[in-house]
Image (cartoon, rainbow, N blue to C red; front, side, top):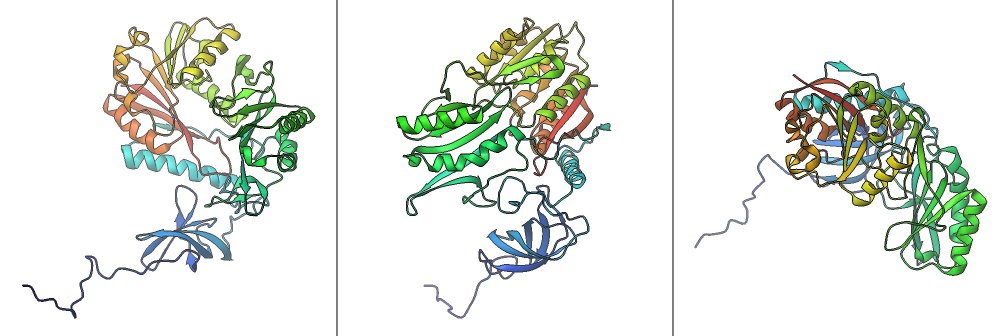
Length: 450
């Protein structure tokens, strides 16, 4: 039998384990540099601190939001020594609302951060850089969002309805009566909305509310229980007063309160109008979206004798403008309802040379009937998890030019490495400033076959 030695202490490999860092603890820190998400990085007590709202060179007092292993997440509470480039956030809710995390940085520095993030991901994950960096594609710094989700929660204890935006690093709701990044037509709706919702007889039935602006303004009310007749009448009267459409969503898809309602957005350069329904994916930044489409067509340089493939096509945001130039466009989307609406958009705009198909893009492309004759050029606009299954098969399509629009530099870099392995070179790349005042990075990359 082994004798226990009560006086002997064992330590984990690597030396003594540091004590835990309690949530709420305040710590003085010197910020060394920025992380890719715009948070300041500091090193203290053998740990790496990520501090929201802090800039390099600053001495700040930070409050701990959470800690795991050697990483601490914190929020800047007080600035003892501000960086010269710090600016006063234009929005009075900055730091509390979780929507905009970079308002304390000037716009040029925001763009530089996003450019650096894209370049670092391409170098680190793919070991490549483009032959040419494009200038950032930018639009308005504020008043650009044409879509916003409003958080709604019934507080049973307080017997009151909370309405606003989610707080930073929290599920709490910040009551907000104006939003500096929201487009002007939605501002009066946002200001009047809390009073309306709080006046309903059964506010407990509300899930959330979304605001839209395109060819019309619209209010989508998501409800988790049936709405009473009086509450429905109040919502309809409110929308009529605001000049907005009312849409409702219970268990199924969103439905218009009036069947004759049509919601859409325009691409003016190509004289196109695309219908959509709340719940469909549309880019929130109309000016940058139109500039993005124009840049994509310019980079691809499609001729009128070419057959082009648009993967993850959505409602036809790229496919319909491409059809103005190409002999034929084949557009593929995974969602059946979106595919039907995209085809209807083509018909409504008089485009007969674009054909839409629903397909699971994780399956082999060569087995699909639309891929058999190959393509001169391919455009991809995948979701955040990228297009790994597609790019692994891209060489079977015979395209010499490939344009990749990305909302995640990490998956773009991963997929770029595979494209380079297949014989494509990264000819050009640049960021798209679709979400100013945030660290979200969208990018465009052009690949050409060697």
